[in-house]
Amino acid sequence: MKLITYVEQGKEQIGVLSRTGDFVYPASDAAVSYGSMLELIQNATPQTLRRLAELAEKPGKEVPHAIAKSAVRLLAPIPCPAQDVICLGVNYLAHAEETGFSHSNAPGAERPYPIFFSKRVNRAVADGEPIPAHQNIVDSLDYEAELAVIIGKDAFHVSAEDVPAYIFGYTVLNDVSARNVQTNHQQWYFGKSLDGFTPMGPCIVTADEISFPPALRITATVNGELRQDSLTSLLVTGIAQIVSDLSQGMTLRAGTIISTGTPSGVGLGFHPPKYLKPGDVVVCSIEGIGDLTNTVSE
Image: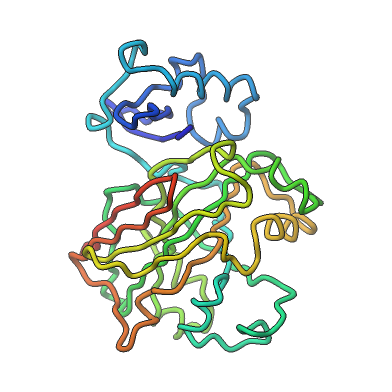
């Protein structure tokens, strides 16, 4: 099922999309009363999720408070993550090649350790909301379409084989990046953590809907031009290893967001680079999850 956070009549709520995608069904119509997506992820029982899944299968005329999707405003599925998003660096070989990444873990060499960094998110940007350009400090704004994994229960010392049981679902994340800020500060945190640099959505697709490990087409377009086009099965470090490795030394709390890296085709990889400018429309899409569309503002 596809879970969403939305605003209707000024109130932030959680719900499910109908299987057709035309209607929003409030979670309360499945006798689920959690106030946020994080609360749902942290507390929902299998029975709770089953009721929500059954609700999603109903036609709109059978749901008491069904709302046309066009009548609500979507928010990011987890508008305010409890912690920084954990990210994977250069986790597709083609992206490492296009960026000239130089490291002992470079393409063609054995990569024993994944590259982790974090991304601060005060509030995630929703589908349809703008990406701020921050032109006072940014002259090389870039996009990165990524598959994000949502952890469903606290994970500590988890084996790779057991990882699927800890995954709540998946969403689309655009790891917006200020390349000049990254370069100037010689690290990735600041250049990826400016306000508005984490578009996410449009929904969370629960893990039962997607075969593990996910092998989904992932794309990004800018003003209709296809820039990124790959498969999530091409991750250098797969999801099972990512979650297992991280959990060996720290607890991954329910609701943790892990963004798994971006394929080739980012603005930095073109010659000359194709960075974003105000007015550009970026669409990050993942098969089976949906489209995340954002316009760059001033």
